[in-house]
Length: 438
Image 1 (spheres, rainbow, N blue to C red):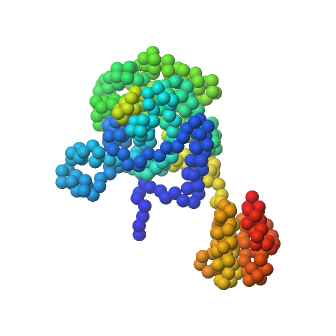
Image 2 (cartoon, rainbow, N blue to C red):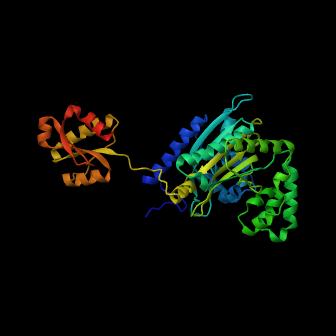
Image 3 (cartoon, rainbow, N blue to C red):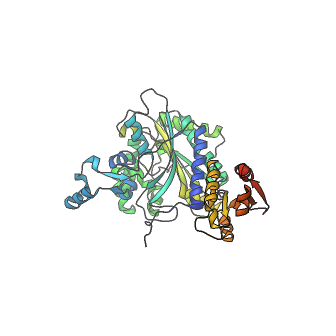
């Protein structure tokens, strides 16, 4: 029997309606902040992700799904070295949204020099070759925003405020959300800080895992995000970035906090917060759900002022965030919040004898032409079975066509909730059904 790939899920029924509801909430809220929707390809050149996400990250080193055509795959088996392929032949499935959006901005000139900032949002599946577990899948769905061209600390604060509003609009209680913020510095102060962290790791080499020892040479800050509990415990004594910020980064960070305070936004300063991707600079933030279920982070983001240059564009500041649908759904279930709602109500057209199937067909088309969700029998069921099927479709109204009704130019309209019914002239049928559904 054909089965879905482990670590993937089929979206249908209540789960699909929840995803659609989340996207609707996002579109309405983000629109009030001036964000327009964008969609980028699910397949990009590997370099697009390596440039920004970073070679030292687990995403690039262990989790990206590589994509090869049949001919390239045969060649790869012969050569045994992916690096011998041309750069344009080396592709990967999208593991996150920011790098693709920035690539698109560079390629299409979204943000020419001196132009107004570009604000976009997306709702797309992402792909990572992780070990499938609760809330962590190989194909998962994210809603995210990217704000390109804004350097003002107010944009950092507005992104954070918009993220928290998003959770509120979904129905999550703010008291069960923990917002952590930090600053990671920039090109002016981070190199010296990286060296301090590198020296700390090497001084504790006997206590660190092999991955962290490798990260010491590639990007030592990744060790703060190590999945090894002992490494994280050791790193608690490492130098803190907030003690090593330059004056400009410190001023930016203080201004972000000032804006958040003015907005009454509760947050916790977490000096070891680095996020999982290398492109972040200055402000980073993460939101954790606090509840009975052990869910952890349900979203986060930060500033990435150097990413446009890494992707081949002009120096352009940027900031954004992403939230995971599957993780948020776990939080909503734990909080007993239903965003799927009931299955949409509809009308059902039933016929008492097979000879009236053509008349039922015409009535069904008329109702649908008026924008009414309509179902009918397509298996030749008895009238009793048709009523049962109408209930399964959550039909609010049932239109019953019999020989006597058709001869008289009427139809029986049955209210499936009150079970009241009456005969309605055919020329007023659509209006009557629409009225009952309202």
